[in-house]
Length: 125
Image (tube, rainbow, N blue to C red; front, top):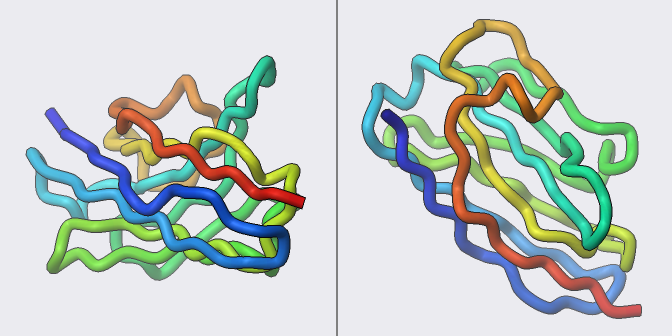
């Protein structure tokens, strides 16, 4: 079992920045990949970014590449999503998720095993 708790969401103006955090507990954190997803109202949950257990490899959706950075601190059992140059279309509930079943990075929500409760990010124009 893995428990995930996100924090750091909020309201920000377009062009601003936010950093989301996701604290994990329950399994050895460095053994599994982590991902960030988001879901806007009336839209499907979509992949944002993922990072391997070691932190050495990352992968991003095209829509956030160059603006968002995923990182992790395995000593603190925490994964981060640094979001810069935010746009109104980034408005969504953001979720962190743990993929304990594979070594490669995956982008499909259904394959992730554990999810946090989500944190709201609202970007005003």
